[in-house]
Image 1 (cartoon, rainbow, N blue to C red):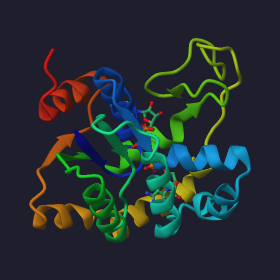
Image 2 (image 1 turned 45 degrees about the vertical axis):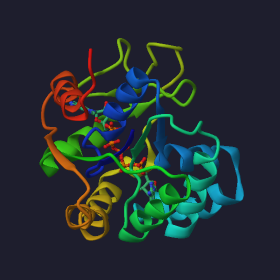
Image 3 (image 1 turned 90 degrees about the vertical axis):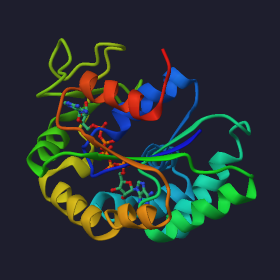
Image 4 (image 1 turned 90 degrees about the horizontal axis):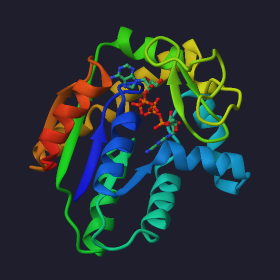
Length: 217
Ligand code: AP5
């Protein structure tokens, strides 16, 4: 199964994608995570992406498509793939279609997660991540037992630089301008697209997500 998770920053794509990929034993492909890893590793791509990410702008399409192609080449053919935060522009969607054609696979489902801006801003401003093990917390909704410390590994939690208020505002604008048009792109393309009301707790959202994807117990 090839699945795309669409939706604004902070709507919970990453949270839901990780759970589903774990349950399906599939691959979770988050371009945001791949870019952050490239930055940590100090690669040329990471250096080129940094200024765009910190400003809340999208990284250029060709860099993203090259990154995704390279990453997909390491995933076993036929394995389920859950795309999170990719594609984000029409050019990326067209590029993905080409890549899937080349490997003889089809897009099965696009899932659009939706929530009001005030929820998104609260989730992003409250997000804290563990730089050591990658665990994600939220100061409002899912805080760690001890403030600022990872429950899993004891490392000090950090805030993503692009979760600062002004950058969040820009990310939301960029989503509306460049990514939201993908909804009509996929509707016209006749790809099955399902909408999920994501302004609910993680468990409720996941229950509907599983249902929509058709995961059997
Ligand atoms: P990326 O890392 O993809 O960020 P994003 O899409 O802005 O998504 P987020 O990770 O902020 O939100 P999410 O929807 O995954 O929510 P999450 O589950 O984490 O991209 C970062 C940057 O990289 C971009 O701005 C761009 O510069 C660049 N980039 C990446 N991909 C690109 C591409 N394809 N093209 C070009 N540039 C690209 O949850 C957020 C918080 O809410 C967490 O604290 C979580 O615990 C909490 N939460 C989640 N669900 C719930 C719930 N139901 N109830 C309560 N709290 C919840």
